[in-house]
Image (tube, rainbow over all chains, first blue to last red; front, top):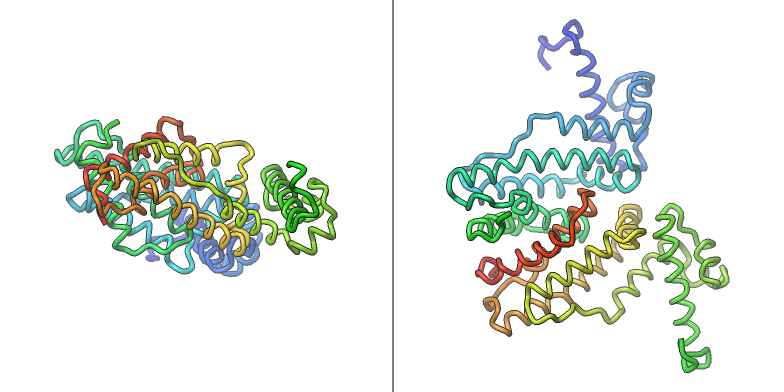
Length: 198
Length: 198
């Protein structure tokens, strides 16, 4: 935080409070899970007064929804490596890392999504946004002439990434970094040979 | 239930009680979810005395674990259609149906797996068993000469089925029967062209 970001700048204090509270939500969620998440715990960890947290976010679900909204607001874009296989492998490296880091905020949010419809809807919107942003890796591959025009970006992304979520989150089995890369390469090769047309 | 299956046959009454209780667990879980599942509710619905249910299964989690164990015990095998694409499409038809029927016992069990480690472990074992049984569709395709020897059965099955679980359960977006079949065909074609070698 630089001295340029201060309370006298419009939105400065509000943005800082939000960032502090969201960092505390992430930490509490990862450490204690949805059942252990409380407004008081988040307030104490963030150093923001509990009445401020109650006034602005109202409920634990309100905190979770805002955490995901903040993720959707950020300026994340997929890495550009020069090849479809490389771009997808980098995407899978990020996903595998988010799902296997201990404690995992992502897995905690997924668990919470089965508890409350608000978190489920916020997570759904977050992922729609991430997959939309990721589609550019397919567009770039078409532009480079690496894969046929008319390749179905959604199927490419799903074939590359779905095995990670399924195996790590639902099947609860480990997945090596090598296998995560392999699924990325499988999807890229399938696209190259023209299997994944629209 | 035929007259041959009666209490005088060893295991007959016990097996019948188990079947009645498990049917009640399925119905209660699908209707009320994990939070609404109670031993008393299951006993009332099954017509089995609550002390019997308490003595044998002890807890709600004990009921869930046995429901999944019963699924793993059954004689399910993947359909044999004559082609890898057909076999995988049939597998995906079953998975899509289980995940989209309302109410879905499968989705309720997945939700429960994020609440209790016992359910998570039972679900993990259930899926390990199902994927092991499903591997025969790849073995048969190799034997028919439809796909190269050395094709990685695990990757074929994951590429075909993971997009259904990911999109329907985690991303919470609908998936047409046509798209579910398409993922089956994508995986089969990728195997045919030799992308999915071990």
